[in-house]
Length: 406
Image 1 (tube, rainbow, N blue to C red):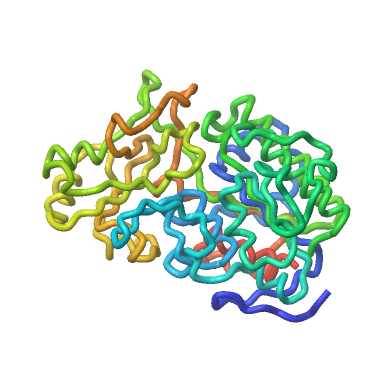
Image 2: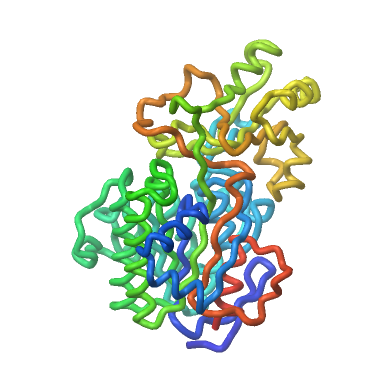
C-alpha cells in the first residue's frame, strides 16, 4: 500500500487503504433499490444505506451508457473527456461513428493512473463495447463478461476466465451477463485482491422490467448477495448508475415516439437535415434505438427548426449547439447543430421505417433525457466530511470512496 495521492484530470485522489470496488449499475432508477429493499430481498444494501452513505446524484445528459461510464472513471464531464454519447456523426468525414474507441478519449482514466502508479486494478464489464475504453492504458485486468471466452493475457491481462468464475459463457441479452461479472469480481477479490476494481453491468433487466416487479427484485437480490461477499472480504463498496430508466410507451403498449427525421423532411425537404440518435450502439434489440435525446445536423434553418419543434408535445428541450454544450457540459464538436430532449414518457426516433422494433417483446422502457438523470450514489462506509449542500454527480464516486469513505 502507498500513502501517495494521485491527481487525475484536475482532481486529487487518496490511495485506497482497503480494496475498493466501484459498481456502475446500468439503468438503475433509484426506485429499483427502494422497492427491492421494501420487498425484503436486499438485506445487505438496507444495512449499507443505514450505516454507510446514501445519496441521490445527477448523471450526465445524455443519460446513456458510454458518456456516463467514462465520466465516472475519469471524474469529469463529457466536455473534458470527449465522449458525448454512444454514437455520433462526424460531419467532416460524413461518417457515423460508434463512440467506443479509446482514440476518441481526450483524457485518461482514474483507475489507469492508479495502475501506472503501482496499484492492482481490475475492470470487468458486461458489454464488450465498454471494455476497450475502460481498459485504455490500464496495467492490469480488463475484460467483458460478453466476451469472457476470448479473454487472453495480451489483450485482457487474464485468461481461462470461465474456469476461474465457474459459470458458462453468458448471453449479453440476459441477466446472466451481469451475474457473471459479479461472480468474476468475487473470484478476483479472492485471488488477486485488487486495490481498485470497477464493475459495470448491463441494463437488460431494467429495459424490460419496472421497479418492484418479480424479475427486477430477483436481479437486485442477486447483486446484493455478491456485494455482501465482497464486503465480507474487507472491500469498501461504492455504487452508482450511468442513468435511470422510464416507461416510454402509450396505454396500448406501443412505443411513444416522435420521429424527428420525418418531421424535418416534411418541414424543410429531404436531405435538409440529418438526425442522429446517440443511444445507438451494438445492443439495440431491447430499445430499438429509441431514447430521449437526439441531435440534428443542418446547414441552415436552425432557428426555424427550433421554433417549430418547441411546439411539439413531448419535447422538453430544443437547444443550439452552444446552448446544449453549456447546459449539459458536452463537447461542442461532437454534438449536433440542434439538440433535442423529450419528456419522461416520450422517445425520439429518426424515421418510422428505419427502426426495427421487432425485438421489443414488452412495452418500451428507455432513457437518455433529463428525466433519467437522478441515480443512486451509495457507499458502504460513512462520509462524514461530505458537504451535504454540494451537488453530487455520479462521476464524484471515486472522490467520495477514496477521499471521504476511507
